[in-house]
Image (cartoon, rainbow, N blue to C red; front, side):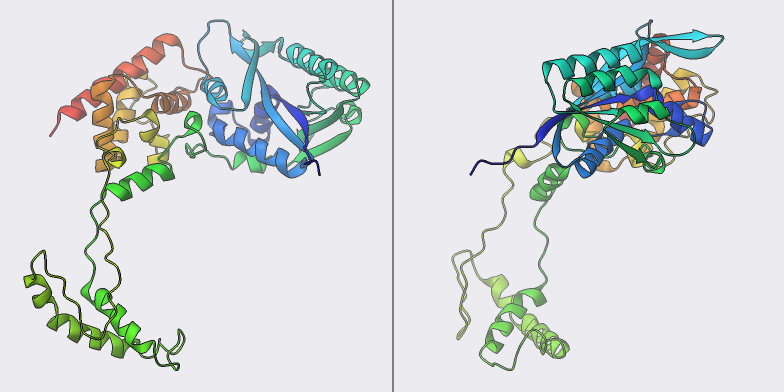
Length: 400
């Protein structure tokens, strides 16, 4: 019997619409003040697509936003480019009387939707937007036999009625589910978006740790339980009232047996009479490849400040918006809030690569935007941020 394969779908997300609508609903001046984790946002949209469109498989998320002519990187754009399954398409960002304006974004989105529909790249196209300029894209896709869906943010006048009428199905989303994605550098699958230690790192640390000392009462309790196994009256439920009695007997037996066991040589194999001796349990041996100190420290092993501390965003204090002082303050708080294991990784990483780790650099730029009240950090300011960070870290590493 042939296996069912869901139809392919492509999502087209107007980032300007999403951010601007959330800003208007919350009264924020820019997207940095919203404090939304871009990576978690991409992941949430993917989960919503699986929940509301189970009959299709989303191939990728196409994000559309404006980018300044200067080429200065925007943190949100960098994270989109680094995230598997997401693609960024940009227009031009310019300013009129100090207010940002974008050009060519809607045109590029419409062109991509029409091209995908004509080539038959997907059986369904989902557009997350609200501008009436996108109506021709939905109409062209429908004329090619492609199903069209429209997502928009509920509340107020956030979407064109004509755009809603042009879609085959419409989904209104609660803005609060996006506002709840406060930037905390949440861990995610895959190295490209891993902001904190994953389960494999925890397993490595556990394998490298020495075996904990076993309580003698726990060791002696097993033979006692084996002796009681012959009585049918003993069960998991009836054993609880007799726990105190068994503990007392086990403690007395433990006080009598350890001296003989400790004096036994390496070749001695004491076997208590009348007891079944189980096969010896080999002691765990940490292989070299599982020892964290032996393997090279990766950038994903270094946890950014926003993950370590909830007050990481308060870099504006005593910095007056100066980039170098912000970098110094970030390094200071990052070092102070890090554990001993984290500091060891930091020292090892900076010894091999004296530069700002990529994940930490993205977090630093994100917090710097909030501290400086800007949409993006200029190139000279980014150099000052990193210089201040590295200077402070060198001083911290040299301290005993």
